[in-house]
Image 1 (cartoon, protein in one colour):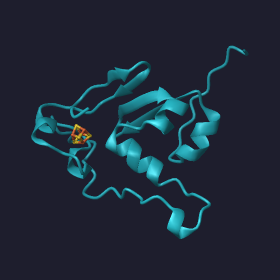
Image 2 (image 1 turned 180 degrees about the vertical axis):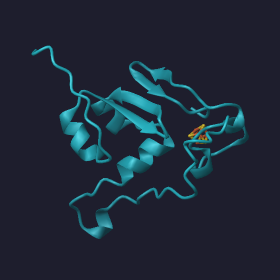
Image 3 (image 1 turned 90 degrees about the vertical axis):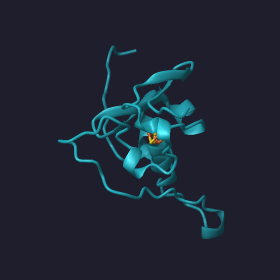
Length: 119
Ligand code: SF4
């Protein structure tokens, strides 16, 4: 309405949800998922997005808390990026196909883009 655009950068996706029309998730300088906010929260696809969403603090008692998806492994050096998926060393779903180049964003449903070889 005001001809105005904000780019808001944070690690706290719970804030982003209420602030943004669209969310782009980045890992090591690359956009790995992009979708309208509601769609991203309803149907996260990239393993890094899922881990970020699972890290959102929830005001619920322990027995009702969903299990957190912890990210393990070493962060790839940003000055020596691999020719394969940049998240591959930390991804629980890595497969042989993940080593065939760094996946680029592709539309997997209307307005929902993901950079993962396995979806
Ligand atoms: S391409 Fe493979 S390693 Fe990369 S995010 Fe997808 S499943 Fe994980």
